Amino acid sequence: MLGITITPSTGNSLIAVIKGEIVILEGLTLVLYYIGIVILVIMVIICFLLVISAGL
Image (cartoon, rainbow, N blue to C red; front, side):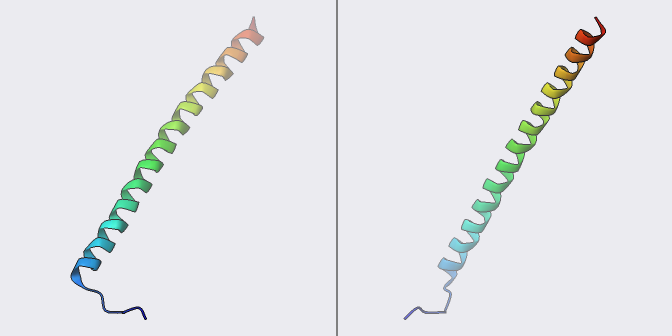
């Protein structure tokens, strides 16, 4: 017994929910992006340390 008619209020709430999820996804991608950069920097530093220690 669900009505298919969409009133403006439910339409706006649906749009708000979709926008909220998009914002959350963008935040997650930014966090993952920064974590990836940090991991890359740490790996580069470790590689330099290994090369220096091997050279000595």
